[in-house]
Image 1 (cartoon, helix red, strand yellow):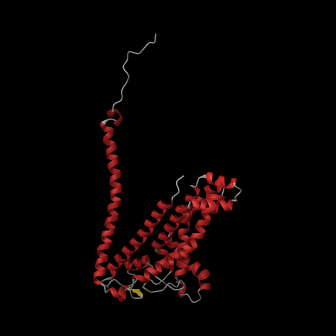
Image 2 (image 1 turned 90 degrees about the vertical axis):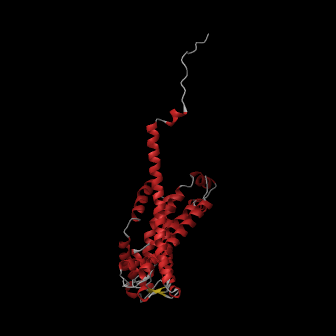
Length: 315
């Protein structure tokens, strides 16, 4: 005969699972703190947009729209050609990408596919540290080293070393670690089984890297390139120092000539280095340029996010 226990089995109620009232209060407080932090970032972004839009509207409503399409950005002359500084921004950022894309992707492929674990653990942190180099240092490096040694032989007669080519190369050096780090993370996340399957079919490491790993990580790689381009558009000090044209610029896409980007124009307006303190519309134009720059980078980031979501491969 089997003996049975006379003690009733312990039962756990829903209230026991929820914990004590003090514990629930603590969890609620923590949840509200996190919600407040997330909401604060959204509110700050909204306030930035509102402040930019308000002053930008003041500028648009007070300026002759014909002056916005003039072929020059000279605020002290009331010439606010937005196309001039947009063209300068795209020119510098494009040159930067021509430098950073091959260097960054090459470094990413090496670290992900060729470097040993020891080398990767050594080089990867150094590469990320390089991303923290002050841009003002790279600005003077571009002006004093890149311009006379690289740009002058290609562009003889460059104006006192100031040109958009040197600024673009400096920006490229600045964004190379960003592209390399993000792209390497995307490639390193590709499952090892894909590489082993490729090797099993007789493919070489180069073929595996370029035709298996690279396409599998294409969403992260494209996101790295777009983020690098966005970072190049937002760069200020390198362009302000190396590109010249702090007082204004004529419309040009010639990299051998001085030029001004949106960020450099905002810096000149904010510091008064372009001698426009007495101009009535100069200060509102600062916010107008800032709004254009904000929309520009926002669109790029949305495109990058959309691309990543559309082409992400799930393993």
